[in-house]
Image (cartoon, rainbow, N blue to C red; front, side, top):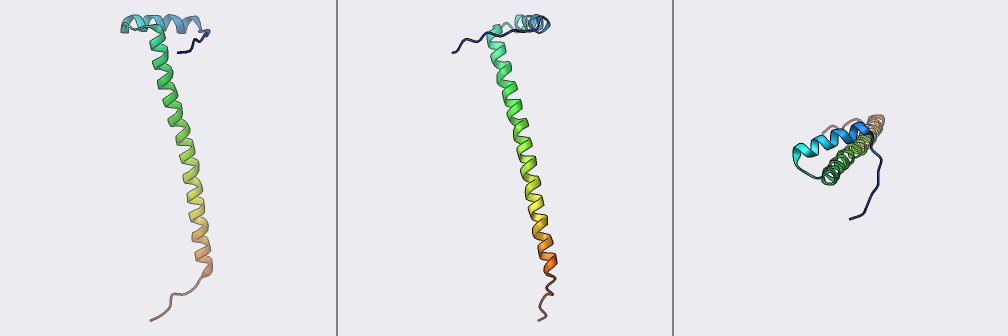
Length: 79
């Protein structure tokens, strides 16, 4: 485990201390859990952006193919 030094706003520290006391857990454990959850939240958020971008690209590609097919204007063969 690596050591980290950080500065917290006084109000954040006071609220954190109240919560960890109520939960009966260490401040270090609480902060580790909070960062794990925040990292997971942000990974999901970043993935949504990528998926949104990719789905937009796929839709644009599909529309291009559709336009090309419509531009062909080949009549269906009659049997």
